[in-house]
Length: 327
Ligand code: UDP
Image (cartoon, rainbow, N blue to C red; front, side, top):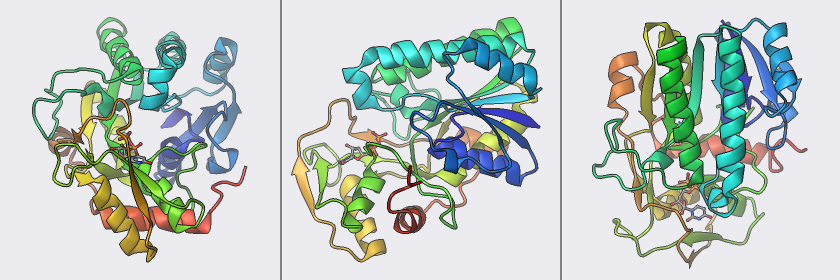
């Protein structure tokens, strides 16, 4: 297939692009490079440097490249930032997604994959969290993704667009071999921040709260290897013609912040000093996915379920790219 990948210069989008190309698909990356990196884009992918707000550029992309499917990664993705700047999310994320959907439908493309989020589940009643859990977006970020999921629901019914909404829990790790990995500026995610301490780029990591009702008082999260996420996208793409679908995507295992830091200490051999700070606004105590549905329907199963492997691959990337892509 020929796939238009928005955000294909970003962390997850660039790794999915490389996996698609490895499986023989063709990829057109559409990215404004506001957060992504040109060097992250696989050399065999076509690259369009443009913004989703630019309808003419988007139209030209569809006119020039007759794509069979769209994967939409380009987005603002930070819960905390969305609490401070809601219109970046309720505005940009929604209107850019809407532009993309309008052009997708107008060009008779019938396959669409959306990066969605665990932030749809702010007050889960059951753990691990299945697709049957009540949707309660935890922030303008989560709400923006939910609005796009609802648009997809209606476009399926009205326009025959087949979609998969993939709700990621905590994407982590790097492509084995250390070719592609996480490079955010500023970095806010736990594992890269902890590894920056191991690289002596930071003096310590701050644990955001140790008074949660969890086994060691720190937040529990479900870390899923980015390669396993990528495989889930590709399986979902191949299954789309059989119908639209929504999946929660995680490992099904929860690790505390302290547990993650301990694993990073083991992998790096660095003492990694940690200090306790206040809670971060918007952080739920516990988020663990049930991915039973995608396992049963698509036969997906994580190749790298162990947190140690996830951290080893992340460490390989950060150690060999201490300044990320270097731009
Ligand atoms: N966290 C932390 N210190 C940091 C960054 C993150 O204690 O410097 C915690 C955060 O509160 C959350 C977990 O680590 O419980 C994962 O946070 P991250 O930002 O990586 O992902 P999120 O869960 O927000 O998607």
